[in-house]
Length: 524
Image (spheres, one colour):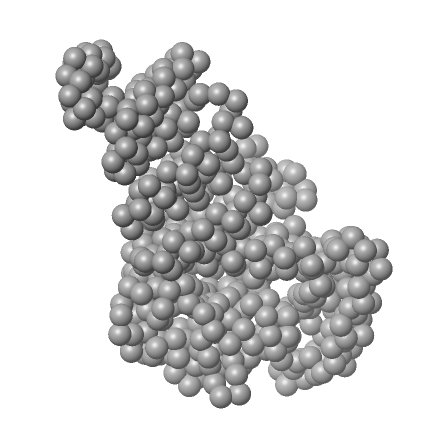
């Protein structure tokens, strides 16, 4: 899903314009191309690719003649060993004629082919298992949560044996779940494993080991073993001191953790009746510098304030700053073809380009533009999404804005109550990301998918149960996964809570096959 979109995006940025005579042909979006396929031939996996377990997505640009046969095909992205097999397959495809003004017309289409990819399939399966275990380890209580945490540790050790930070992190989560269940004694060996993993990496005491030893001390104390807790606190203090000696520039940072350990240790000493020892620790505490707020590291490029502006007849959620004049955005919009009929734009990633030397080859400034509706009926409307980008990354020094079609479209259900007032407005169109695969759907089907998910959300009995029921949240994005399978992203208007819903089109209608929490992408 994400790989498909990323590859197509990269392909279109690297190949923003077709070569030669193709430049004059109209383009069709992926969904239209899918619906016109009359015969599709699957690619033959080259023996060398099968032996090396190389597969994945190959993206091509094909000229489709007025008769529906395929002419020139060129590969835009994908593993080189798969290129010729993809070209050979697509050249055998046929399409029902594409009509323009009622007459068959040649067109350009971006198509993708998916080759079996054992490595990616295995990684995807592993990721899904880890994601399920991670959700289970962070929610609920009782034996189910603890079992999920144990499984998360096992899966992480198997998939990332060299990622010591991740292996330590999942053990900390497991220990936290055990402690929440009142099983501090059982959490002790879990943290001891984390200490061994860190020591194997660092070879000795450091601030991370000090933190883990401090956590062990607290667990021993919770379990009633005060003598062992005393010993662990002493080890944690020694580790902090060693870390400060090796990295004096980080003394202020390390002393934050040291202060906490010393405070807890002094309290324990008093509980053990060792008042003199507690007083000595208090004196040590008094020598530490008072904690100061750390400096705020400036970002590479501070975000600009965003606001709705109407420029050249296009409503733009664009930077509203003295550094970005209307003519900067208007200059980019001029690159749109007249047929685009743009009505809305998202300029969250827009930056003004005035310095020709500094701007040469720049591609990190863009406008996401919503073209005019191509279908408007049955209580919905839909249309294409284009990207305006600066320069051509293939040709350093290239200047000017160019319009690049994407494998994306937008959808809005009627009634639309108002022009969107911001990127988070409920009236903002839903983004649809297409991957060719197999099994196109009609625009009516797409609208019914959104209605189905919204209806399920309206009937939800337990709002907030992101891993159990479809939530009553706005639909923000739809991803065409494969065949008749889609992913739907729901996000609240503040973009703080999100849910991912897996949906498949079955003969009996839309069916939800899975739900779970998701980290929503920010609106910027």
